[in-house]
Length: 122
Image (cartoon, rainbow, N blue to C red; front, side, top):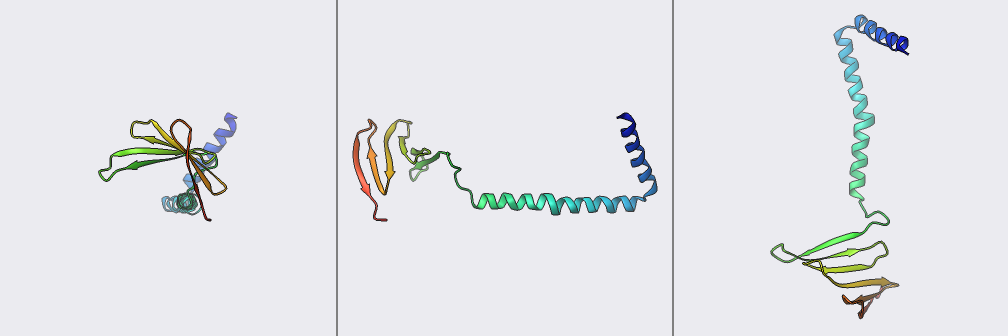
């Protein structure tokens, strides 16, 4: 193994002796251009596409914070993976829950008692 590494080192040293600094500089520029074209630019494009079409992943919860005109938090809601939404006040106490199935949203209070339904005309 050391023999191979020595040969590689010597071969690298010989190539540096055979080339001029201008040739080495041109090789370095070509390498940077190669990296930009085939590594950095495609990676940047993929990041931008991912950012543009960002959606919650399957199985990910969605949390929203509600604020008044002054920017003070008045509560938040958390939607779980099954589409059930739980509402909390500014102190973090449960204030209710909603569940939607087949265009009908059922609303429950903090104790789990049904308090209403909303039908969609979609």
